[in-house]
Image 1 (cartoon, rainbow, N blue to C red):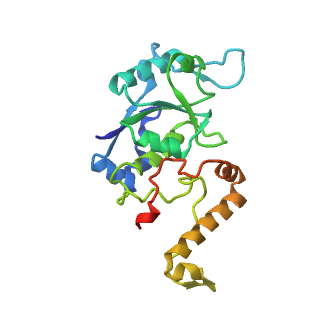
Image 2 (spheres, rainbow, N blue to C red; image 1 turned 30 degrees about the horizontal axis):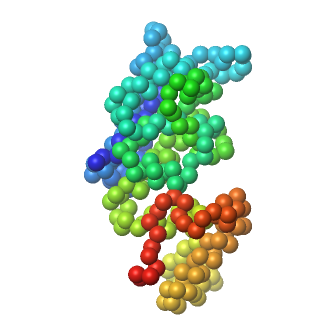
Image 3 (tube, rainbow, N blue to C red; image 1 turned 90 degrees about the horizontal axis):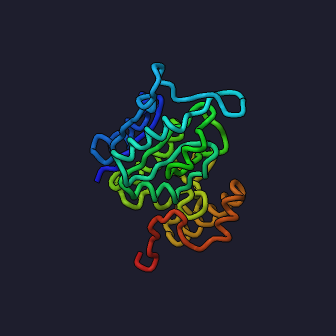
Amino acid sequence: MTFTAQILTLYPEMFPGPLGTSLAGRAMEEGKWACDTINPREFATDKHRSVDDTPAGGGAGMVLRADIMAAAVDHALEKQENAPILAMTPRGKPLTQARVREIASGPGVTIICGRFEGFDERLFDARDIEQVSIGDYVLSGGEMGALVLLDACIRLLPGVMGASSSGDDESFEHGTLEYPQYTRPQKWEGRIIPEVLRSGDHAKIDAWRKQRAEEDTRLRRPDLWERHRDGPDQSPSGAQEKDKDKE
């Protein structure tokens, strides 16, 4: 089954963009995922193909019209009715690795890219649309956020990263940041790879990695650490846990 991404955007030329290269690009060539763009201007009714209007109540900027955007959404639903519909907006719920895994496990996703001052709120009242944010900052539009979301999903599709376990032992998969990584040369500018990583003792290495992951999370992301400390002892993203007893 091919994971299909539908992108509602005023700038279809931005896709697949960087997703046409590297892992994602190779996966697209191999048919593991597909990208289709829908321009909301195709559903405009005036000669200027307008998709926005001034904010009700006054204020700066323009607002994407609910009627035009809903028509584009309905068209997307006709093409892919079983995929979730996400709108990229700073007013949305923060995207998590757990949600990324859920999306990647399905048939695809429809992503609406915001522009200007955002969407007429009635669009979300009238259609089943999940509002998503990739961070507490504002971009020129939702296209860059859509690329981020898609990259996070595509790398988890079967066969994209090679080994099925490649995405299991990473930041956020177990509620913490990933432990530090090292590679050759063993000594560089007077700095030496930690002795435990050169010991060959896998039990000690696992313990060191767990300790460093927790320490770094506590220092760098206290918000994440609080959730990890108070949460259940399992992968919050749904990644497959390794069976230590069988190793």
